[in-house]
Amino acid sequence: MRPLLNNLFGRFSNDLGIDLGTANTLVYVKDKGIVINEPSVVAVNMRTDQILAVGTEASKMVGRTPAHIVATKPLVDGVISDFEVTEKMLNYFIKKVHIERFGFSPRPRVVIGIPLDITEVERKAVEDAALSAGARSVYLIEQPMAAAIGARLPVQDSRGVMVVDIGGGTTDIAVISLGGIVTSRSLKVAGNELNEDIIRYARDYFNILLGERTAEYVKIKIGSADILSDPLLMKVRGRDLVTGLPKEIIMDDTQVREALTRTVRILVDNIKTTIENTPPELVSDIYEQGLLLTGGGALLKNLDHLISESTGVPVLIAEDPLTCVVRGTAVLIDDIDFLTTVMVPPSRDAWKK
Image (cartoon, one colour):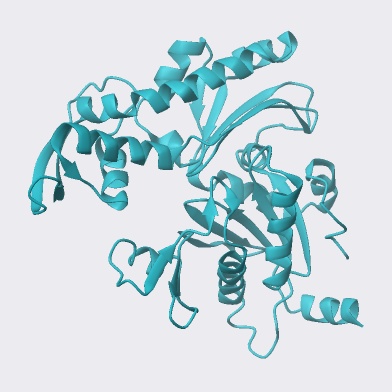
């Protein structure tokens, strides 16, 4: 009886592709495009255990809530840390894209991008969260594979392609050939770590405490991985750690670059190690075609130049790198046969057509 109901409600549902990221969640709806691009943040009233806001509205509350309201990120380092909150966040997004289907419970088929090297338990948590949120069936796809597909790279060819997907919580590095990942590395070092670097630097050198959103804004505006041709300056406001009062300082790109050096070097060293572990025929392909940067971290100024200088490999930045993964899920939604060849094996029989 349940499969029949799922199929019935499925006729009134739109299949979805979801990039379930540590920093942002993007949702693609079949025949409509990307309809949701919101922070992966949920605001919870701890007294009543009610969800007050999800996504953009919840993000506005970060660092500004009273004690009984917590604006939380239910994903840490690309994996679910709070199952119930993640389930409610996914349920909110699924209902939001089906708002015009009044009177029917949406039961879409869902393709979700996940980080490399997550455990069986973590994969099952993603599947269960999506199914509990209303999905009738779930496919999982590794994020660098989805990013490569979204960037229209020929992942099914014998020629090797290399993708570095720098997200909020994880960086996934993968060499892909014949529809599979040949060599890879997954790091718990990404955009959030860069934000923390800026917060630590401001605390140590200026005796000022910055908020997470302020640090991210500094990174976006004047952060860089290599020397800029034109110097950049920016006013930054925070709390003076000596007096406890508001304080404004001026930071320049040199200081921010110094703050980011350690984390950027970790990224570059792991890219080099991945190339060193790649079969020589595929290294030749990468040298000829270049390495593709995707994810929000790809937008860090001059990161492509630094990686190219360090590895000797041409580096390209994907068009609209923030949406590569969700665009890859969009391609797979429209081509189920292709999806079955590149999907991650489910932790259980999650797909019931």
